Length: 286
Image (cartoon, rainbow, N blue to C red; front, top):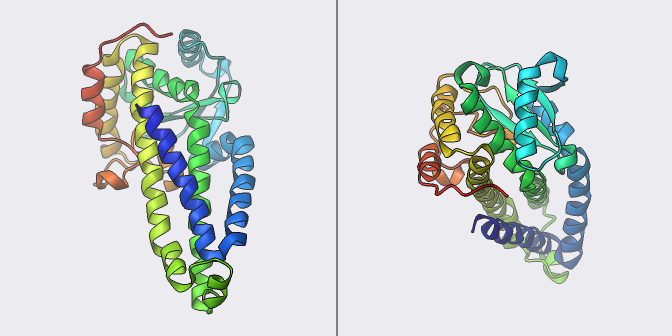
């Protein structure tokens, strides 16, 4: 169900991009928007891991620097039938973790210094399994594409706002198939909000799916459920100095102290995630 929901939302987001391009620039604007999105997605495909690591302040380590962490990641990757991902750390006291990379062969799992301070090894294994589930499900690539399309829609809105200010959207747009002034207002105000809501909805859906798959990888839903409970408290006590552009990557909202309405949250409610995990009828992972 979560996979189908993700596909439908991604199709809706792509359709919104094409629609906004047509509103602002007619048929030619629609084509330009689509081509621009393809170019941006090409960049996201090849460089998403490097961009995410740099924005999160993460750096890669080798096995000699942390053999215990590498042993845990390797064991869980084998259980998930995945190649061993690269490992990175973030020197931040806030407890959190994320995964990135265009495919399992180019994946990275990153953990903060703070997460090692508050979780038991078994709970940390639950977190690592969740991140490996994102890699297994190709969520790392999906979310890079979603963020790119949403960013293109926002960029078109910004360009449309400048055109409105200087009278560049009007009858000429209507002559080319655009929607003129009303279309420009939609592109500037409404479309970016809709794109953001779709992006957040996809992010929440992928978190639920990764929770379920991660629980099967580690073999016990309670490992992740217990970790989420501690991470919720930990991020509220020490919010992370993270970029909003990378917030959706982390296992829990890095700005834990903020009270954000559900529709505008990149993560599902932690209590709901824990309840779903504890209600799981665990089947062997295949």
